[in-house]
Image (cartoon, rainbow, N blue to C red; front, side, top):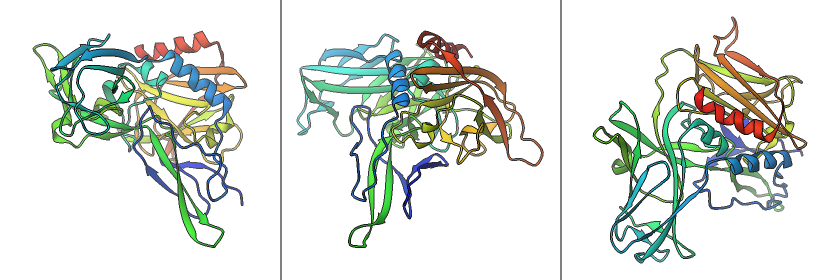
Length: 373
């Protein structure tokens, strides 16, 4: 029996007889299970070398970690290169055994503030239902004392103050899930029906879920100093300060066809390291939408991606960036479009791509140029 992976409505699935898709909270510092074969005898999907090369390149050129050491004998703070201020209260951090951590504490912070950073780090902005978000910053924070990882004590938080220019008094906060769990089901050697799970990086990059803790659910704008102020109530988890985009126009589904230079391994990538990727930036908005659902069983010339169903506004102007890695060569195409209404008798609209060979430096320049689109 052959097993073919596929993507359905933003959910990564594998099916023997019956498949299901669930999400598991993971973080950027932990490694998903990578066993070569599960107990059903099904070989785990190998990382595609072209995809690994592309994602290694993107990470190397993307937002860097910043490291700060503070003395936590009392409340302490540090300010990042972007001007964001992090304040930690005394006794807010605990060791794995629950005892308070004090003395020198080292924080590692990664901040994403623009469209290029979202592409390099593969952290686009969209809800788990595909609704686009306008970002005021994405944040990842970890803490340790020597080699010991620390966590926040229950009901504690790190207070963050971020420079911003917004009209809204409250901006929703979101937590990011960067992995999914593939459930594989079948009958074992004694004819019992079982389900086994393997956790892999999410091809969508990150799955944003709105924060429900009332104390941390919103960033509040302070007009006296032009900052957004919010609480991080957990470490080693992506947090996003985003508002839903106002998109009143009728919505459509966009199918993106690659007439050339589409890497077929994209459709079977379970590693989160797809060798072909497609991003869309709405004009004038700090937002990146990733098209990661692949077209199922396409004929030649129609390989590519599709958006979530009925989520892209008709009339929306924006810029696509298509990227491929094939045999050690990078390919790219940047295309500015206005999303058209579906043709008569159809329920989708199309955009076509023909990525051309680009150098590594040219690809970096294309990604950085998305900031001004």
